[in-house]
Amino acid sequence: MGFLNFGKKKSAAEVDPDLDDLTKEQAALLRRLFAELWPAAEGTVTVHGDYAESSSGGQFGLYNLSRAVKLEPEQNWPQVVERHISGLFSRRSEPTDDELSDDEILSLVKARLIPSTYLPESHRAQFTYRRAIVNDLEAILMLDYPETVSTVPDAIVSRFDADRLWPAAIAAVSAEPLAEMQTLDAGSGPFHLIATESMFTASRALDIPALLARVGVPSAPYGVLFAVPSRHHLAFHVVEGPSALQVVHGIAQFAQMAFSDGVGEISANVYYWSAAGYEQVTTTREDGSVTVDGTGAFFATINGF
Image (tube, rainbow, N blue to C red; front, side, top):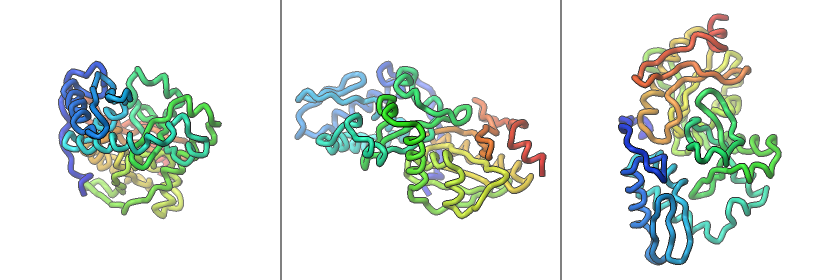
């Protein structure tokens, strides 16, 4: 399976001043691809720092596109840009996000698990409704169209009662088709892996009970260990005894490898869910070493066996 082919992360480079998710070289490549793939039938297009302007006067922001390509290897960028441009035209006659009715919003909204660094500081003020999950993880809302996704801003969220929009968004993720589950064991104990092309695969961790029900586990009274190295991966182990402590190492090893692939990355750490909520179990340092937190609900559970 392609999701298990891991590569190396690229070294840091100077950040582009207009598209701060990309380096200057990456941003230049994105702008060049956008201009080259723009349909000739739509006239000419001029690409500026963070937007493009067509000869007919239309303006198209490049921020969402920069986020999309950042989550893909560069060899896939032409296809990502082409899909994005196609989506712009396919939605041209459709209402914009803020013109959608409440029912339309509810039919499209999905919750997405993201790293807390997902949004640059310059955009955080538009998405203050974000929910903190644990330490370096949070959740945001997105509208999932057939060919594109868009992040839901405060202006739309404010139209709803929070108890209505978030449950609908999380339920939509839990209802996505579930790929065949794999069982992996690196020698420290088995854990399960779900890997799909959906950018909401890892977001299933926002509702662990629903996930367990989908895979045929009636309950998890001792909690669940899990890792979400990328948007495409969710690794988990239902805690049943003290051997779960060893499984942490296997999941951590997998999480580091999948995170290093650099496609839709979320976190290289291992987490724990129980009736008390979420907590972080491991911390990955810059040198790649992993430390395990010996406090908290997980270790209280292990010591209770």
